[in-house]
Image 1 (cartoon, rainbow, N blue to C red):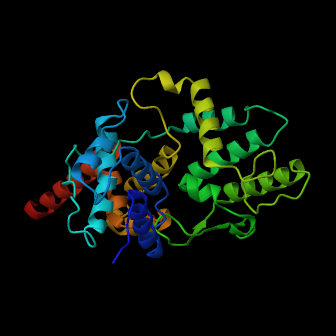
Image 2: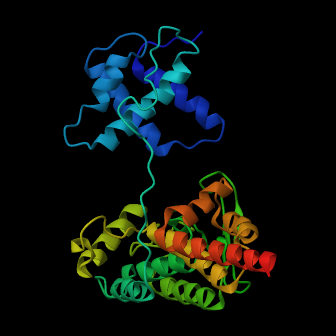
Image 3: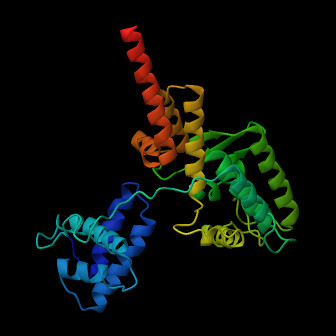
Length: 319
């Protein structure tokens, strides 16, 4: 029997239960705490209802339809847990406020764009500080390995083995650890940054993080995002129309280039894609297959490859 009094109690119990199962729920947890605060500010008492869930989802007038759908989906997960203990709980139906999940076609960087990105990163202010070198090395690593930004920022000194050209990626998105091999030039760049970093940070940092800010503390996502957005504005990428390139698109670019190279080399992609899926740390191989169907350039290459194989087979059959 749960002794729930407030919505906050329900949220706490739900998050604790999920986190004991290994889920981090950092973003979802923050949203649910905001929902609990909203419910209590409204004077809501008792089990979760459809009325309070929809009211919270629609509370922000600036939110897009997709954002509202995502908010109601988060509350839906909470409601499905609460109904196990409170049968009076009302669960919002799936898709009540529209689709809550979508795949956005990513921006695939060209070689020239990546070169310009790294050059601009090296020109960030202050020039005498560590920030330009940190951003240049970080962006280069993302482009060269396809790591998630969170994985790169969580690297420690011991995770980076430049001598053996290997990275240890710990506790990833799906709580799996993996090894990521490095090209010799990438390993050299990481080693060069590490030596430069150690010279710049005069005092011994409290953190073992590989990527550091000027004060010797870990370089955080918000700092990386702010710097990236500054670079993007400087390069004029925010005025191209549509959605501007993102940090995460470097990961998509890596995956697409690998798949395109395999197609051009005549590699059996259906077999090789399993290797790529493990390398990228995908939870399901279907997440890797999405690149073939979700990105126009890859879909076109895959279609041509299919046609060539089909027609070749027909010629042999009728020859």
